[in-house]
Image (cartoon, rainbow, N blue to C red; front, side, top):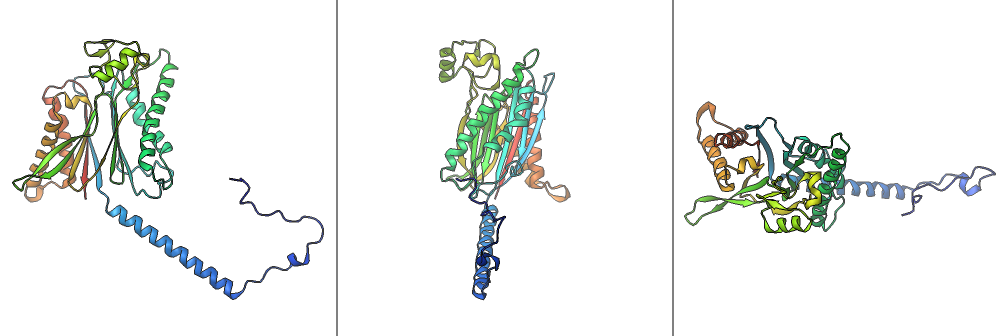
Length: 351
């Protein structure tokens, strides 16, 4: 596009102006009426567009995030998390066909808390800068590319900062990020933190039962594809760990293991929300060391059910019940003997 397309024509600065230009053009009544008609048409189109956006927003699921973090028996908390039920404040502009973007993430650090903290502070801002704009027809493909580029950029930025320190930082972190664009869920994850969703379905007896959906895929060196990549890069897997040390095969940071096949490319999954969906659990491996995914979902449902049955002035509201479920799930993980840091994000889904 010509950068000067919108510039006005240059005015004559010397010599007498032609007579035709000295007299300002007269605006006819017909032209005035036409201008008013066009303005009314533009205003009406804008009003209808706003009404469409309002209807779209009203039909979207309502998402609320709750978090519980326990240090366990560790000397320091190396987990980090982010809850952004409305991410629009980070985006310069929303694509024309998108009404809302939400973001939830948990990061489980190892070797220190610097990689997890860096990812929590920077990944969603990098995502916002790379987020697609306009009414692209292939928005799904663009969002997935955006997530891949964001993880790559975050890893590179942290490694650059880590290598500039004296001595160099050796921190690393898992990452499980849930990006919700209107009612479409995109999950990007590295390492052994996980995301699961509870969906209610009608059973043969007419009752509703919960179904646990895995939204992420674990990455550890014992998985065949992961081990093969590590070995092709010249690394080894001993005792289920990279070089006998690192428990995960993909991560942010861990600069000393990048030459051994440890990568920062996330696994991507997509799922459309329905009115049957109740909540999403994001958690580090501290939870899943003592809970199966299905057990965690049923534990949360049990707390929600208990709260809904309480009577009288102390009856818990829905938000309080989800908050209680989140806190009790993390506490139960510690009670069951998990010595690791435990961070749980519970995202309620309401219509």
